[in-house]
Image (cartoon, rainbow, N blue to C red; front, side):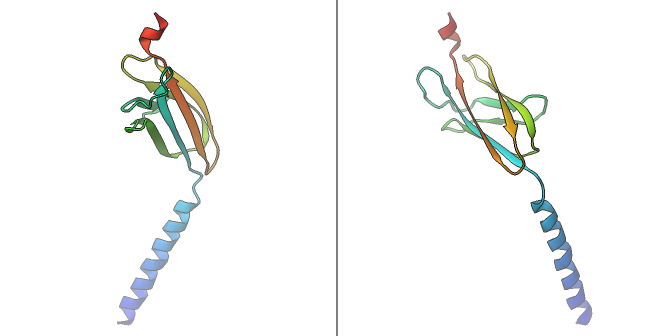
Length: 112
């Protein structure tokens, strides 16, 4: 019985050490919305990529997107959607902060 109690306590201490290590990371979040520049309507299903990485997501039905667990730094966020011009925006992400970027896409037909 004594061996079981000691093993259980050792397990709890190990799990606690890993949990503390994870909370000390300097992680940031990039979130935002993508909308039509003319109408202001949110655009669902837009491809949103962090340039120079393989990190990609898509906007939800309200045009919102989120990148979680991003390392602090300077990034270029690119949004691309069928029948719209590709757009990019520079984002500076601080440690343990949430950065917000709102993108307005122009229809390809607007430029004609």
